Image 1: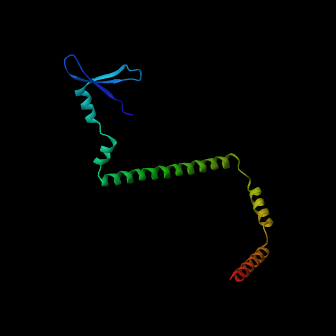
Image 2: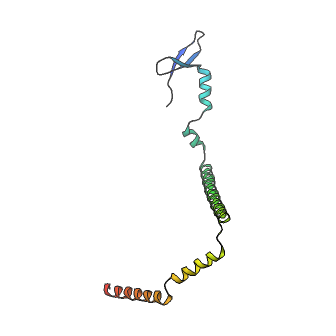
Image 3: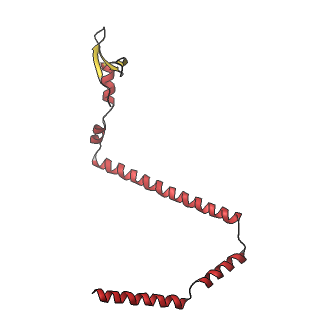
Length: 137
């Protein structure tokens, strides 16, 4: 919130701006000349936006979007590299012998359903869908 200034004059007749705090004591006293010059140096947000042309706005927005996109991509790449590094450390720290790996693969293949059994189930499901479609139409 902007602070309100009280105007007064010095002994020499120069116009002064005085800013008071909550208790009423003077917080800052400036001559009108200096305060006015400082005000002119600063532009309000509305003035800044009005000074920018439509091309400038679109260029700024495009630049912001590009920076945001690159940041996101870099973060994703860094995370992927970190995950890969962790995996590599785990594999080097606790390698499994080749025998165990091949045995596990063989057990998984044997435990999976036979091809003929799964193909039969698929055929039954297709037939059920066809009859359901016919009965609804």
